[in-house]
Image (cartoon, helix red, strand yellow):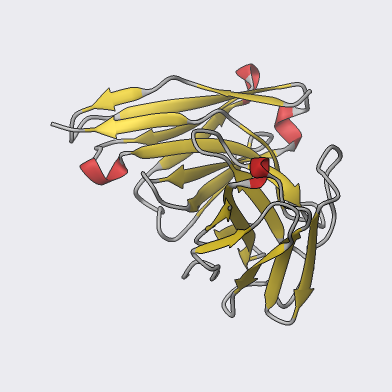
Length: 120
Length: 112
């Protein structure tokens, strides 16, 4: 069974850094793309970017380029989303999801979400 | 890129059918059969219910069906049940060369 398990909720202050994680199991982590999706309170889904852990090929939505960093550590089947300086507007739920792209487009497995709260 | 356009809300009575549309001119909705749909209940993560416009993953009820005409994709839910009350999101590629995905704004389905 494909599983993505995300790190727990975070409460941070503006200006602080943060790195959240997403650990995959039950499939070949290195040959599947992992995407990060933001959902602000009461709002819809926003695709942030994607990483291929096999070679760390990373692509970003123009809306998030330069705002976050997506990375992975294939030795521990884990993908990361990080901020160097958080803002209140980064408060949201963040999901990782396996994005299947081979002749299709679907997110077939989702993490449980990591809630990030940024407040002074 | 702007989100794909979905109605903010739809409603229907138990047993009826309802359709949610998803349109986008700056996406690949019209160019490829690469539209998927997700159901999200309050407090939960999204769940894949339709992919490649009209395919259902194993375990998804056949009351859910998808279609596409031109730049507009549609999700139809037949035989509405109380458990169908949720938010629904479509998605497609904004840029297939970079795997950049764009989601619809979401539609709240209310089962009356």
